[in-house]
Image (cartoon, rainbow, N blue to C red; front, side, top):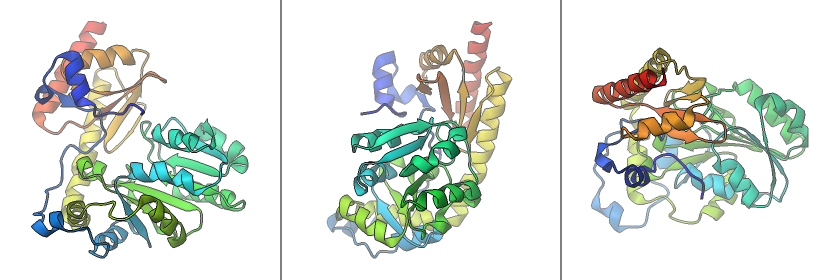
Length: 330
């Protein structure tokens, strides 16, 4: 299995620091979880029902004509490659590593390509996978450009798969409203923006025919009854969503400025994280980890990703650690 952020227990054992004493900035999750509604006892005692309103709430929230609820968008990432015969797949990179991994594992020929290379390669591809906004670079692509790529792919029966896991703060860039188009598939993560990764919920937005094929792969009762209740409540809470967008945008901007003040200006980011390339990524990661601050390290391009601190005490702790790192570097 690939390495991901959030391996807090592993870090606690490795560095000899108790889990409770860590500031975990490794995951790119909103650090303010939505309030959990009361879950009726029957939700634990009965099999989940598919007509409880969750999908309707998701369609309204995302602005999509049809959705399929899945136990985390990771589930869809792993299953989508099974719905096509082996072919040539382009993955806009660097990005979330599970995409290329899943297509390769299903027997497809995968080429990881840079943004400026897509127009050169796209007419040779059967599938193009894009994360928008990108993780970890924060790159955001316009709907117009993505729809142009989709049109070129569709001329040969191809797919455009867009992972919008970090799209909640910029819904104007989403392709959700266009997902009735054949060959356009959008993935949405629930846990990141709502701060509830533990519920394992995501949605696939696409035409009905494809959603039915994917549902057969997912199988029945994949999303638990309690998860469906929590998900629906959060998707309907527009006031809490507005607060989450505001504070995450403010926090992300604050984090960008804080890193810049310590000569670590980010090269990219979005509302839930900041990302920087540095030749000292390993030493920065180790320095912070020895102080109980967990970052996300990317060794292949010597970069680190910082998630958002939740409270003023967390900000102060990060600021003091950055100041100490800057002093030691000098």
